[in-house]
Length: 214
Image 1: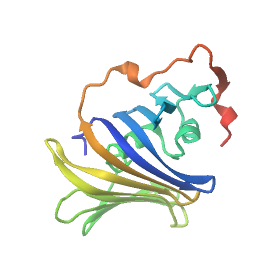
Image 2: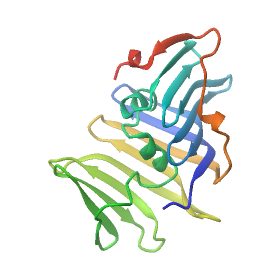
Image 3: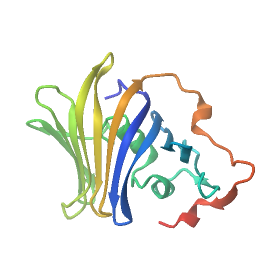
Image 4: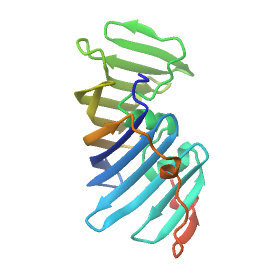
């Protein structure tokens, strides 16, 4: 699961939630364990740029000319990405891996692994019996209901192993669904640290990230 450590790719992204739905092109740059850059693209350039590292998350909305920033937290990341996961988990997910910790007590059954998270919560990872790669991840709440799930599909062969070109994430409680289809991803590339940091553009309005609500 550690064979992929960085990614640079264009992707077609479909989003559906209570706040609307849409399809857009995205430039995705990831370096595990905790660096991320997302650019929502249009024919006129980037509409939204989101960067995150272990210390800071920032977003620049080119249409509104607004720059927001704050500490790197699950809540602030969700405000900009609509993904209710920690940064390390988002980085793993976008790299085609279940957002789980390897450490811990996992129990195997047929083609799946399950572990208890405490408080009645649990995680389940399902593997393809022939390919041996993870194809599904689920995180359940105290009552046993699924809170988050992801499906990995359309695998293609790379020098570092099989990589999924399609990733579907569903946040059941928030009624949100995100589908990512990668286009010719570059894997395990060297990425400068500056890619994951952005400063406020000179004429942009600066706001605390909490102003986005959520």
